[in-house]
Length: 208
Image 1 (spheres, rainbow, N blue to C red):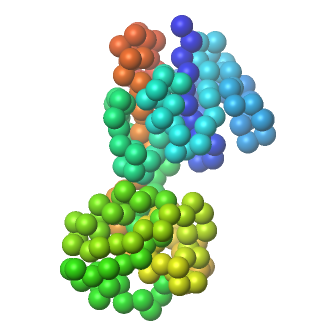
Image 2: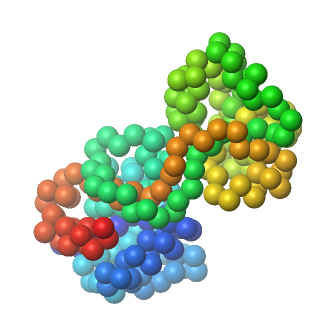
């Protein structure tokens, strides 16, 4: 039985491919250059499917893939129902944080009982974070150019992933509060783990 691994393009693919090469699984094509969404590997028993980062848990949960690599940010936002999450791969590290424009009085804005406009694609994470502080928020769901929202008055703050902080700085924003350290996790379809464990376990042991 062939194993299907779900990956997203970009940093997660690059860093996962580096680990996979050490266990003898090398993609036959580069997804950045190929239009193919199913990519065979040097191991005839393993193929890759290329999906959006936010869709990896869905493909794995519903059996479109046996296992996959997903950022903790996606798992925090969507939940892990129907997934087995055996371990942290310690790759694609960054953090989820709150950021505001320079000069914005964040401390005053998050006094208990206050209300804040927050732009983010992590709506559930943002709500949970601010609810724990006793702050009501109106969320504005965006999927890109998040840094723009506070600059044009669309939002008071953003919740987004931060790596170096250079993009925030370049746009006159500052990171005011970390929410969580983020890295990529291995996610496994629960039925596949039972049915194909003999095939999966050696790969997991090597990935660890």
